[in-house]
Length: 282
Image 1 (tube, helix red, strand yellow):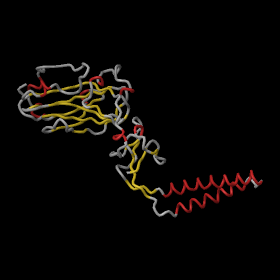
Image 2 (cartoon, one colour):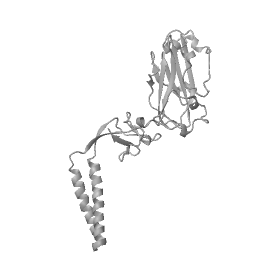
Image 3 (cartoon, helix red, strand yellow):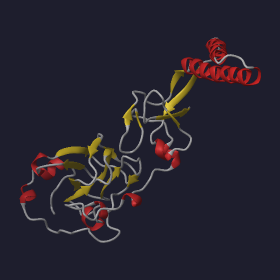
Image 4 (spheres, helix red, strand yellow):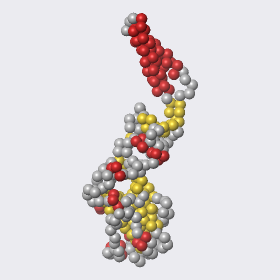
């Protein structure tokens, strides 16, 4: 208390930062979350600090989000706490619906990671909360207390981990990544792009032509005793005809995009070029 200013630097420069906190609280009851109690974060000229060990429910890429009023910082450490690194920074304030977003952080399922959030309150309304986007695309906002544990023995089951909505899952990727939650792949393409499917059309048409010719040859062989080689020759002939006609098509481009989370998007098509990724038309 009585830490003047609204900047984090105001807090760090004050000698009182080394003193014992005026009040402490453990948030471990049902319904608690990584969000500062209003009685703490709204106190004039105060500083609030929250910390805990976040248990990753899935392996993959995570994004963390920080919202504070006034200034705030968010840190993470996967080893000694003195090696923590900053994930997000707010200088000034964010409204309750506004967030500072971290870089992508790759975490391993079942392991705990130290999270620390700080908030400097000057005057007026104040808040402190932390959210996370899981590798599945689902978002926990703020992060429920059941996702915090030093040993991760009582973490939520995979079945209880939230899933993204179909709308969110089917969106075009904005970072180039697509694929299953725990094995996403970098497609190298962000948003919509023009794809030339001429080669796919030619190859597909050739296969269909070969199948058509082969069936005619088999019919001739069964019906009138034509040589077995007839099926092969007809398959080759009709394959060439179909592929030639396909290659002469006028329109062979389309606007497509790779989708964020194919496992939750029923309208996506698996990519032949990039195993694991899926795409849709824009």
